[in-house]
Length: 136
Image (tube, rainbow, N blue to C red; front, side, top):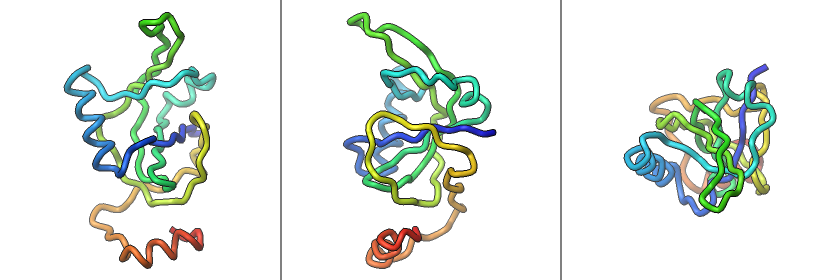
């Protein structure tokens, strides 16, 4: 069974900003990544095709395939986890998501589908109403 992670992109305004952040990390460190405190216990499953799904402003908006999971000690000697990510962010069909702390596992069958290239978003008022109804 395919397994993913879902995570809030805190203080990120939109997918373009997340793209800029990841591009800067790629340029500075040689890879796109996200640092978290907890190491996923189901790392092997995540590395078999899993992605991290990003929640931006209450909506699942995009995903990045997880390439590696690295356990390390930070400069203060605290155990951390680096999720090495594919630098390409894939847009997904937007879906509302309530706030939570940390990350959560997301079963492949529950993950939003990738967005079709060229698919247009509805006007902002309609999108807000569709989100309110849980339809988009």
